[in-house]
Image (cartoon, rainbow, N blue to C red; front, side, top):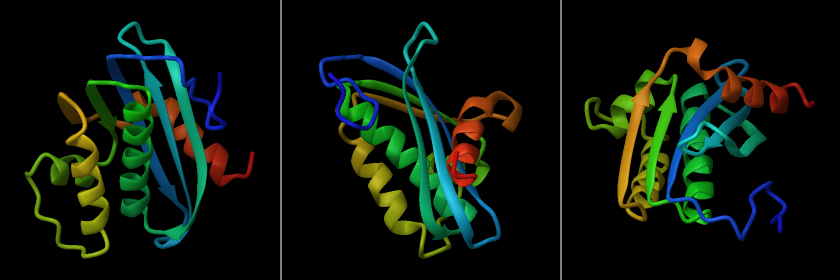
Length: 145
């Protein structure tokens, strides 16, 4: 049974790997997010491809992480690993960088709230080449496809 967001309500998955990407053309400018939620066998469980109101690249990156975590929580995941090509978001969420941009603070707080609903969480930086599916999903939404 689908809930309109491409996520099955009856599906319960303990462990998820979420690949996320946010994109903005211009900074700020037209923006979109993409995320691919995968099980431990690398099967895609759900995808997100959504256009955003004009925003910055970093805000879009955070919004992609938030959307992926929201779907993970909805799916009942307990152990979540996020992979992102945003060094800034990864380092801020891991506590390595201070959040100097006040517009990112509420987004960071949303991430922290969602992490609190999980038993295990990690976020890791990956190069853009390893994030092709999420990048394609963000660009698909940005291009209106």
